[in-house]
Amino acid sequence: MYIAIEWTSAAFRALLLDDDTVLGEKKSDRGTTKVTAGGFETALREELGDWSEKAEKILFSGMITSRNGWIESPFAPVPTGPADLLAQAVAHEVEGLPPLIFLPGIAQTKPLPDVMRGEEMSLFGLTETDGIFVLPGPHAKWVTMEGGRITAITTYMSGEILNLLKKDSLVSRLIPATYEERPDAFRRGVQTALEQGTLPGRILARVFSARSLVLFDRLAPEEIADYLTGLMIGAEISEALGQDKPRKINIVGHAALAERYKTALEIFGAQTNLVTPDIAAGFRRVASRQGDTSRAIEGAKAASGEM
Image (cartoon, rainbow, N blue to C red; front, side, top):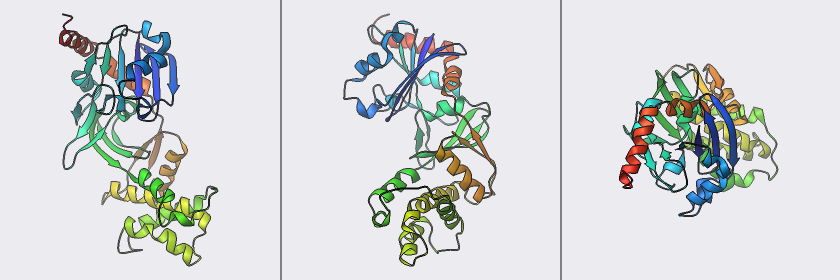
């Protein structure tokens, strides 16, 4: 029996696992950014309660393993699969707790560095692990997988930029305080991003249209938010697909944002497949490397002088 923890900057999620069974789950909004320096051990004990007495080890993934987290682990270079993670994990010993195993993130270093920490568990837990996968979010990840291994990563900050545009920009001043979803405005934004002949520039020129269209009564103020969302997601898809012909894209998740990506990708002519992430399965595939786990634990004991 062991504990698998996905500890991101925004949330804490722990699973109590035994072979192929999820015995329990604990969740909270105590992300790493809500834990003060030096407070991770205390936070962990409070979140787990008596679970720590039942487990033989604890696996960590996510921002808890970053330099802004508790224990920094390295990045495993692509191509990387479940079998490659434990070999580069960092083990840590704390009195009164089972061995703590901090899994590495995954990195692509050329032509520019790109990284992920935690999202790989959602990918490794899928039943279909070949193709192109997009994980929507503030920092959307576009990932290529071959033979169950991650071979390429590209991060798009379109979600974060969108939030900034809607909150504090020239365009945001026209957005009403109340929001009601406008699907047609979203589709119009995606279509505007798709039609490269509309303007000589791309997304930087098209963003201003969220203001200029309103000035000429061709876009209602209450449509701006969804029009901008369509523009940003459409621009992301345009960059991600490049000159390639649209093909099957796997969208990881079933939230409203995933549905919007589905709509946008289909406007671009791509075939889409919504898949449900299963981090428990991802952790199980990593934890099955029992030999690597044992070596990591023994290494931690040696480093602390217990051997």
